[in-house]
Image (cartoon, rainbow, N blue to C red; front, side, top):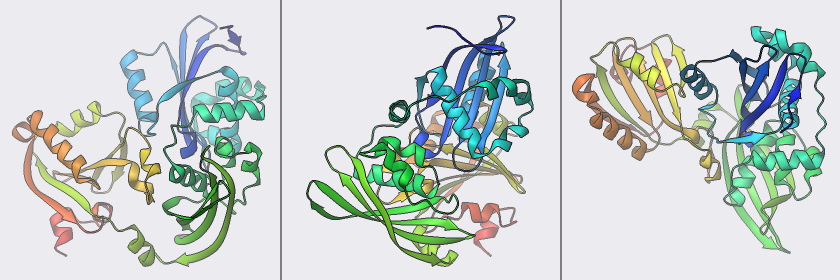
Length: 377
């Protein structure tokens, strides 16, 4: 490989997560600076709203700290790293920057490399972009998988990511985009007919919409041999209330309720799981564990929260609530806690719960100290 030099850094190699169809990509790039020191830059790229919304510049990093940071930035994306070239790196960064040029202003380290960044030029051809998108796409299992990704990117106003999903890549830029990016919350796909070597599907997509919800009905044509889209159109739309949307999203939630006896247990838990997303609430700390892949996108119906493996809420009054939408996930976690003697050393098991509808987030935001007080209100 020929060394590629910029004003301040010499490029060595880079890799990106194969999650471009989720609208987010994690990137780790390796460089040398003018003093010959090893430099690693870590990016979190969002192609719907936030642009370059994560940037970390490390010089001669400590291996463990660097690995933990990479896990913290990219561990929840559900993808694997694949190698990318310098030109592909430039394309990914520049296209994310265009989503929100102001996004880099919040990264104090970025200023020192802004001149270098602005000097780069995106010169990938359409064919090269298609090849990159193929590498940044996990194996597509079926037509439903393709349709869910296609509609997810359609409502997210992110057509470039779908280049590899179309029979003619340029069709990606003729998709009838919505007026602003929305989030696909649920999608139900039904096969309508098969004729002339084309399968036609109806997709009922529930999206967020101006603090409410909207049900949009799409018709998607797929070539069954290539699993490529040949046409996409939307027909019906229906604005829904939060209550109506809730009926569409109902599914059981399984929980283990424990009491934390060891005041250092949460600290160890956090240190041992740097890949989990952490969210602070008034009554405690929530840790979200994601599935190691995005195979939930192939499910019918697709749910936005299908990528969550489990949630762990450490309340300020000493409760630990472990919740999952999949009972098998909770059973696996329970088995791990037993194997690690957590119940004997750090946790006191209280009970297991199953609710017909998800309640953990409602409890966390309710202001109640105990989940039992919330349930008994």
